Image (cartoon, rainbow over all chains, first blue to last red; front, side):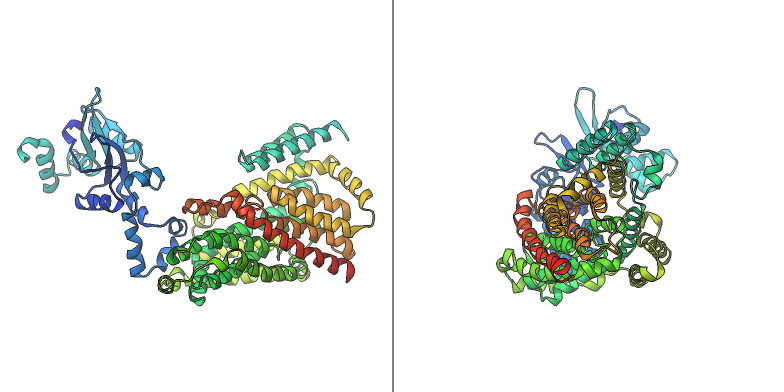
Length: 174
Length: 433
């Protein structure tokens, strides 16, 4: 299986998107990471989904995790509203989020090349970009693992259906 | 003096200046300075490792190491967070009352733990409380770190300069309690008044916000009650060990090491947890400093300097004590008080020798050094390691404290506290002695 076959278009957010909206996008589409795109729609940053959790945690709670136990339910819910106060761009600028420049693979790259690039970049999402700079889409961690599981003989009906719909016969799905 | 002695002075001065400018990692500079001392032939392995006067002071290193391990285990229990939130609720979340209780807790904790650890523990929970009350946390953080520097002065283990002085002057835990704690209690009372003048009178109480603090659940922060009880007992035994030194003749470093071992045993924690709390960098910084200063002692530079000073002082120890008290306060504001005391302790040793058995007038030099260096640490943002740590925490949490903002308040607090120490030293060691 090649990178081109696995590439898909996933929902992206813009730097102006608020943290709360970004969390909704990740939850709604069950994404493993948040893809931040520039004005031209090309991804400029990939943020692992788990990092969004850290946004609701004040720095002092991250320094001293015991303090998380001190909040009652109301206090904890109040903290979550902090996500409405900042945009993803602001959070990236303030280094509250760390996003690596998204790593990319070529469309003709194999599963192992994709796995290697994702492993080295420690990213749940990777871009597919050809040698002329043309953007083909992104590959998510769950899709790579589905392809790896299939190649390894772990043939689950759900995984096969997903790959058949998205990868093996992409034109039939529309 | 020999050429090697002059080279040693050059190495020492260069390393000192580079440490003060804070352009490079201070531990790296101290270790490079130590290496340079060896390279110029100023000091050799035997002096470094086996000499009490010219080598690494293992009592200091292992006392710090042992206490770091004990604190590393104790902090896992969440007891400090509990105390801070509990006290805020006892103050009904009224800002100044809360500040006073936090300041008192910080000073007490600093007397038993080192200052950096104390502020690392108290600052996050202070930020939480201020966040809940929509208050600026900066006055609280400033008050706490200054209370930590004052409170730490009261015991042998409260402030690293005291550990160095205790080891060099052969002063024990009880000596510090008898000579330092009384004036520190007075200073803390005055400091609370200063807190009102500097910050407290401008703090506003918001009953609605106060409810958010009253709803916090302090008991939830104690994650392991069994651990707290067990390590609490070990800490009490360690304090008993310090206090009963005259009977047991156990060095403070040995007591701390035994306590560390016991804390690790009774906690059952995996080693990465308690080893994480050990500030290896600080310990190595001490090692580098001891080698550099020891080299100066070995080359006779310190005794030369002491000889000159002795000729000037003559029998006028009162003036010498005042000079040392005020001079140490000024210099500790400019240089971190750890390297300052590491350099000055051998000098005072040359001047008057170990403290036990000295007449009060001569012994006052040791206490003047301790008071000046500990309290002078409050003068500027770089005067003590705890200040640097608090500035870092404040910045990370979006409340930066500038060097000058710290210094503006720090100078007032230092001037008042040192001003009170002058009559204390004069009365206790000269007039009433």
